[in-house]
Length: 572
Ligand code: TEU
Image 1 (cartoon, helix red, strand yellow):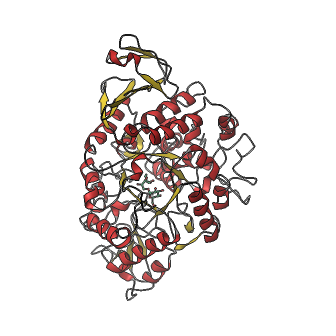
Image 2: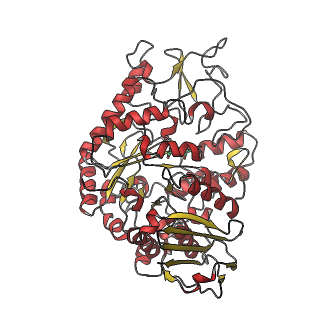
Image 3: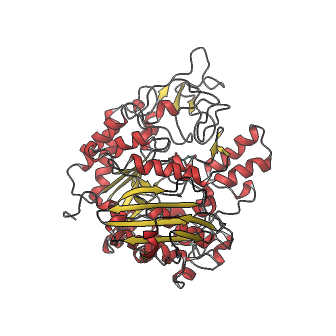
């Protein structure tokens, strides 16, 4: 791999595996590493270059593995370190790299570091986490005694009281996810040494969970009543300004690069998950000269359907907003920096339900149209498991259908705020992370071929129609379309390296753009609506070479597009 170009990931496509829901090898109803190994040929057939594996480390699983209690072992639910070595070898044999999830803003409260830290105020690791006395004039444990008014992303306060030592610890997520104190150099060295251990073991990089939260600007009360994302700011202050993109975050990432990556050959990938990050900030994170990370996950387009009340205040999103947002990111990172391209992941509803039309009539067409638009942007596309067959949202009829800690807690908080049961479920149904976590649909069998046991979350009933086995047989399927898009990125340098120009920014139905590299120009046109659309483009495109089973035929520059129809043309 020593001859790999430094920016190899520009022509790569990443596939995200959420291990709990991908494939179950041992029949206990939970996906595992042997299950993934049984399906690596699916990934190779699809043609992806990299697998990002969501956490498989030892964990109490309060947040499905994003609460890690041992960074150096695999949780028995998912298998063993040997299984993981086997998976790395299986993938490498097929030319696919493996990127691990790195969750180091916080650990699990069961991690030995935290156990030691909480053992008393004199503990040698006390300062590895954020411990603070109760607010002045208050008695610890009483409401309002928290050191700041911050809310946590999973409802309730961001501080939990420890009666034994009389102090609170900070957790921006669940109480079982205490935040590490990156100000302490011992913490940073422990993280870097763990990362080196994994690279030495053969992994090819990291997707860094909420890495823009590791530097805290100060512990002061946050604003009440503002947007606050997942935080209920009617009851708690917004920690955002104090914890997002904090004063030392770039210094820490540069240090990490020096300590972990600088001396290793090209071929590794670093991607930072960075909620609430602006284009300007993203340029700083991904400017190759600065040596921080290769690319970021930004959140602007997945927050467009959040109203003034935050994540659960669901508002309609227009295609014009989506184009304006993604277009601004294309422009902002045109000359410096690099973006990850995604419409869904394990934290988001299914993209075909949210941005497309998941009715039987348009599910396949809209899944293909969204994929076409996304994959042909400038940036590195991420395929979330199941998106390649157009998997849709789960029914989620009642609160009993929810499993995710965020959804379960948000449901309770919405009721406490005065929402009716149906109002609360409507918000959850629009945004729940559980939608993305139903079992991968391999075939039409009872549990979609995911498990021989009872799945931890039921398979979406639509798996009898929507599954990998059926789509492999159908050259016109969503699955074959994804495969063709991935191949196109590998084969046509303009897709990876060309510049980007948005066309028709004010067209309410059509998403269109060109990509250009030297003399090669690609035109992408997509009707992202369930009604017919017309659009006009330069008539010189009339006779251009069609790619990707394009069927639309323009006449003198005028295009008539059926619902969700796309066209991709190339001129050389
Ligand atoms: O997510 C961080 C994040 O900002 C959100 O996407 C998160 O899901 C939040 O609840 C939005 O409402 C990362 C992981 O991807 C997520 O699965 C973890 O739960 C979270 O960090 C904590 O580790």
